[in-house]
Image (cartoon, rainbow, N blue to C red):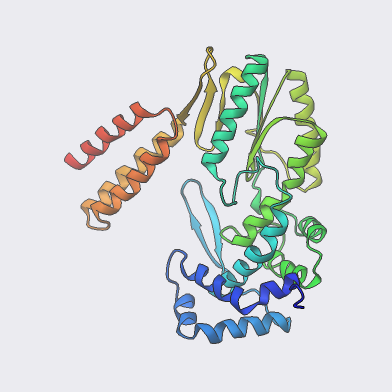
Length: 345
């Protein structure tokens, strides 16, 4: 009788590492480290396997750079070898263990979920709240201040150790948690996304369980609650402040209690309910301005021969598909005219 593999054996299994290599290779970009690894891929995978089994594996230094859209953020890109290890760790052990702990309305970083799924859940929540309370309810809109940069390593280790029983897997988890000094996790890593989802999972269960809030959803560090009564909303928000503080985090200054009739800005759209109970989803004004700025810049790049017109329309049509999930027909027509004018001038 063949015994089931331990979780760590799943991570270091050659077949799983090879699948992790294929996934890493299919990612964006072709770095020098990935090209070098591919020359002798099978030997490289054997070396990774041996280093993990002998506990001589260490996370390499990150390649750090800054992006400025949609906002300024520091990205820390790991080596190709570390991407392979992360894929095997997350795909074969962490995600299967942790996804059972996530509530249904935890929207980010999971297969079958994402921004559109979150928007559809929000739409359902707003419709149900309106049917039950009319406009006599309130929205708490909150997000965490500099979430990724303020995650406490010790708190995260406590959370991970609660779910990960295999001491060898936990050893590897610690390697990635402590791969940066001080607070925070490196943006751009698969394992960081999984850790971030897990870090606030306790908050999800606190709000839906202890506070008993039915209409709640979270996309990474951005979340909402819909409750009846302003005083109850204030009490819930006060409790959330205290809970978040125990994680070493704070809610940012944009956190507020909003009258239900005003709607909510979430996942790029402004969603609200009309007086006759129809849920409307419009693109946020700041996102409209950002799109115009982006496409104006891209048209300039097309004219200068830096990108092809085909590349421009690939990006533009993806944006048009995105806004098609809202009540944005007029916006689409207006943007078509704007782009036509940009190319004609």
